[in-house]
Image (cartoon, rainbow, N blue to C red; front, side, top):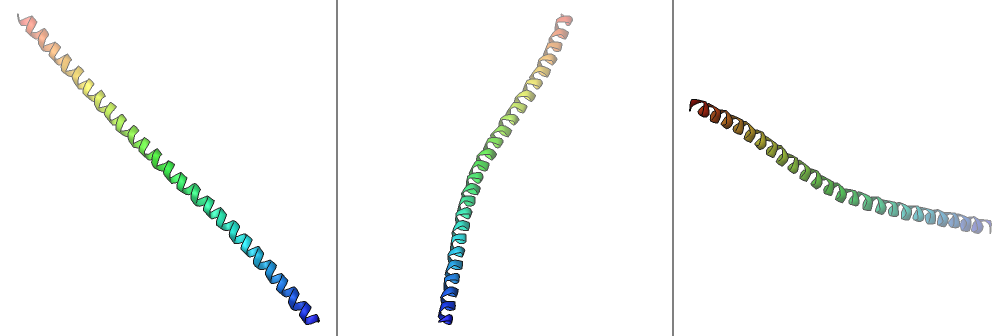
Length: 91
């Protein structure tokens, strides 16, 4: 009987261990699923942020070009004004 009791006790211990392992595996799977979801969400938000930053860069480049064009126009107007002054003096 002692052998049967020992075998039964060992079987119970093995069953408890397997149940614990199963619970730990299930918990790990849930954590992995949650982490994967967070990583996916982060990736989507990161992509959106990259698109926004690219739009900001594009607008900034357009503003820089507009500013350069304005400066060029001011230089041209100053040059034209000086030419007109010269013509007026010649008359």
